[in-house]
Image (cartoon, rainbow, N blue to C red; front, side, top):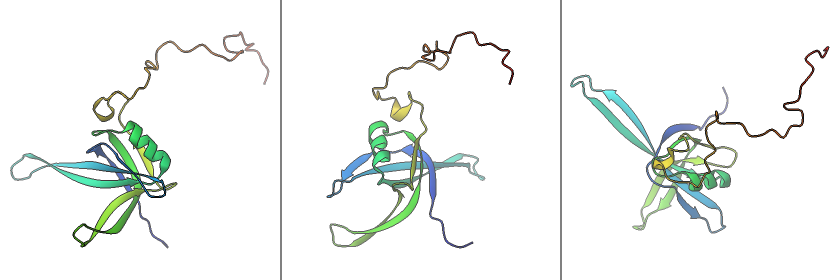
Length: 156
């Protein structure tokens, strides 16, 4: 197999509300902090154990960033697909530092909200109208043929 693959897939919960920053050129960058949990039972004590891993996610895709800042809140469950990226920066003390994060770039990232409407981010009101359940009375059809008697004896 030739080539390589840099792909990360996570399902987790946001640890805080999305942070939105703008570059000098006016591009929007959205930062997410996503927690994933691992649980197991300790063999010796029989107690249930849990470990939380925190992941830094950076959204460079304008449309995904707009969705994240509008609908996601602390506690929201999300599916994230992107690429690992390490960047170097200089701290205030002059020391060079490195940060590894999951980058969602245009055409190479995916963000899916996994909460139902009522559960998003702890139940905040996002201004969405209540459309009712799918089993409620259907909306009237605008199709002129709908509801008309159709001859079942069509020979084809």
